[in-house]
Image: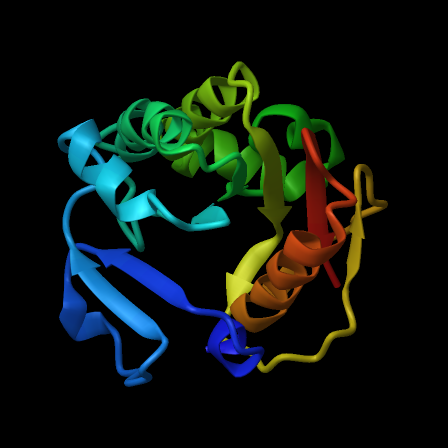
Amino acid sequence: MQALGQGHSVTAFVRNPGTLSIVDERLRVVVGDTTGDASTVAQVVSGHDMVVSALGRGKSFRSDHLIERSMVAIVPSMARAGVRRLILVSALGVGHSRRYAPLIPRIMFRVLLSAIFADKKAGEDRVRSSSLEWTIVCPGLLTDGPLTGNYRVGGRLELHGMPKISRADVAHFILSEAANRAFIRKTALVSY
């Protein structure tokens, strides 16, 4: 919604169009599967300035290797379509961001989310090894809170307890990063 509010044209590549409640002439909805045929993914990303991947398993503890399989299709599809900019939403505690996660969340991630985090790391690794202009966004625990614009971002952050951030503030950062490009080929931790 924020991207549309800023005047951007958006293509939403979704599995279930019923999850979108937005109607806007600048929003194009394409139903598909990011783990499917790379040529279909290439057709969808063609003509765009940037791809934002905010894929996830929702409340499931099973990874089904969704992120890794998706990056296998998305990364080469972007290269074929000539789209260079990718912002991948991962999670605090995955890959390079693991060292910045406080102790309690680190234990929780290892016990409850090990398969999910291994899949996210595999996806991050595929993106890192590409020649794309990528940014990996690692937010704290996502909430449905409001857009505040009052969050911290950095390559490292001093974090305590159970770091959180609203999805709206993560979206705000992604749009800011798309314009400012301060984290090209870097990981950005985002939290309150």
